[in-house]
Amino acid sequence: MSKVEQLNRTIEEVWRERYVVLLYQRNFAWTEDQLGQLLQDLYDHSPNGYLGKGECDNYYLGSLVLLQRRDGIWEVIDGQQRLTALHIICRYLGILSSPRITYDSRPSVERFLDCLFNSPSWDTFKSECQRRTDGKIARLTESLDIVESYEIQAGEIKSSITLKGMSFHRENRYNPL
Image (tube, rainbow, N blue to C red; front, side):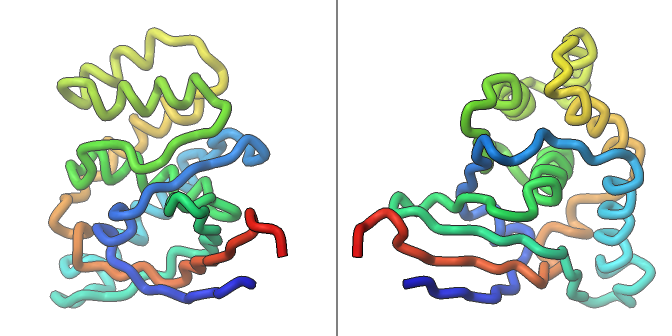
């Protein structure tokens, strides 16, 4: 039996959970267009942004469909690109100090995230990434420059924006009927 919940959560609340991206999901493929739009939208909906008007505002993240496993970890069914982009943005802003997403059967992406969260600084990590030639993390590496080029402050998005449109599916699909 499946229970679907439409939840509105702040960005901080999203990262209280742990997520796994399974092998059938494609590699991260967002370009500057998609990342830039997400960053602009987050800023616009912040208290100091174009739409925030000095108060909290809601931002519709788009479809994010998750399935909770018996171990409590959420499998990402739809929305992996958005969630990964948000993960990188939140690390850059200092909202996250440890990875909250793992990638099943993708060791190069796992190494990327481990380094992202364990490097002493953003600049150190960027320079390490630029020396790598792994095509599986090329878009992830490019995303670092894009995120850095936008001047957005952590306080503007950390807890003031509520993400709408997240669908959390709680299903016990691992037990036979």
